[in-house]
Amino acid sequence: MRKIGIIGMGHVGSTLAHIITDRGLVDELVLLDINKLHLQAELLDFLDAQSFLPSHTKIIAGDYADLGDADIVVSTFGNVHLTAQSSDRFAELAFNLKQIKSMAAQLRAAHFHGVFLTITNPVDVITGVYQRELGLPKEQVFGSGTYLDTSRLKREIGQRFDLDPRSVTGFVVGEHGDSQFPAWSSIRILDRPILEIAQERGIEVKDLALATKKDAFQVVQGKGYTNIAVASAAASLIESVLTDSHREVVVSRYNQKFGIYISLPAIIGRKGIVSEVYLPLNPEETAKLKQSAQSIIEETKLFQ
Image 1 (cartoon, rainbow, N blue to C red):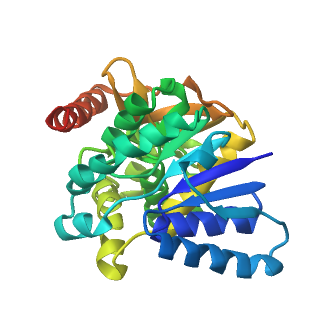
Image 2 (cartoon, rainbow, N blue to C red):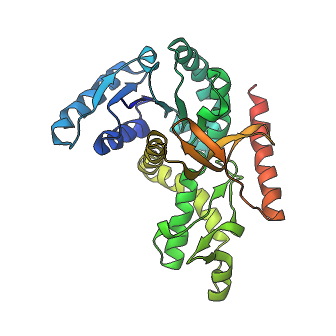
Image 3 (spheres, one colour):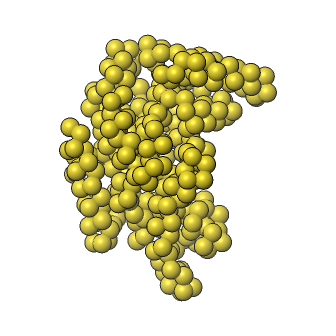
């Protein structure tokens, strides 16, 4: 039986739950939120929709004790208003850290031993905190990282080169934040390096990196939050884990060299990170990755 728990039924959590039930990804879905009235309302709304769906999902408004046998638990809670006010994902850090120790203690008490996926920002630091507090193997805990940022970059490239974004290969890596960057030397379109084609066509692509960073804040400023893209990214990762896909993705995973969680390619499957993927970087990109890692390290130190 496939079972998932979602912690936090805000805009992202509820959208993720909708995608999961609409696609029939799991047999049982456990929803958690500190606001019990809101949680019950969300549950009723989902149950009212079930007769329209092609598959049945058992959905319950539960507690941490219900997550002991879950295959995956997803952390989606946060305070997006703090990010919206400052345009800084680290603005949520102090607020979110206050919740994590209690949540992790309750998951340990429930003997949860599945895969833990976090979307909560700042995701690289938060993922590391979760892993430490949960005591799970590092491979079983990972964050969404720059998975969505990579999708945003592919959209930007697709629009610039008149291509379907799915035709673009490559990654945005590093911190999910200001120091993230596209690994341009390995990004390809039309089965060729993108920088070669851009030079031939007289197209400047470096500005797309800045646009990718700004996209999330543009959404937040316009509607007050982001939900659809980030929930879709999480659902994609969940499906890859549940199906033991051994798919190559970019996620916030533990990197032994830096001693932190940072976004780099990996193969994911039923137990989380199956293996790391080597990404060739040129000297400039190597320096950027080191700088990005240092940003995460410095922020982590402030809250240890």
